[in-house]
Length: 284
Ligand code: PAF
Image (cartoon, rainbow, N blue to C red; front, side, top):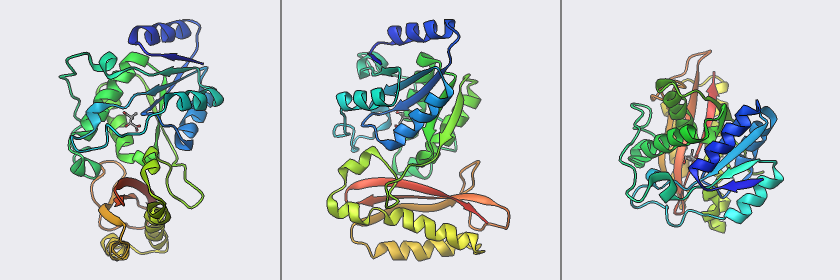
């Protein structure tokens, strides 16, 4: 496995691999890799001769008061993780390599899909994501790219971006990987104090209860969510940002689910000072 830091070098590597008839699976990440990323890498490894993982903590997707500076970083540990997982190349550019001394003036905005849910509490976040993902696709030019379903809004935005801009890459969504107690794996779990960690699985428990009630025949989603909001309010360390049910295509709020319909129930909540997200598929 090699680590490449420059755009010219990764382009050359990919060009040569493609000349040999090899296909490229790409896993974009911000590093501090965990089993969730491991699962993305495994899917890419199973599908392609070449697996490229990018590690870049993208400043464009962090708001002024967010955790860009303290976002966990550990390149040597990530390199060992990738090596053990059979990755061929890590692409780890600096911000200067990606955006130059003067920074980028261009932003990609995917209308409608990015303004609510996480977009409402993180203004500009998805423009930063869409911009860096489009740029990474331009640089790496992979056949397929792998994204976790935990960030289901990000996944929808990336799918739409690729469709609207005719970027020739297939987007693969990969199932959420969880700890034994159900907490979705996330690099930000590293921020949780032991007390936070004890209550953090409540997020998935909330979603599972709603999912089970819908599967049993409950159709009034607002009522189900209201009951769960009251329940979560009893946890001192948990503060809900949103608990919402949305449709799978436009991610617009839904209030009822008829038999045969599907939706997603999504939650974002602060557990202590750490903002976590999770979601679950609803089927009636
Ligand atoms: O999901 C992430 O880690 C990031 O948002 C991504 C897709 C690597 C873009 O910076």
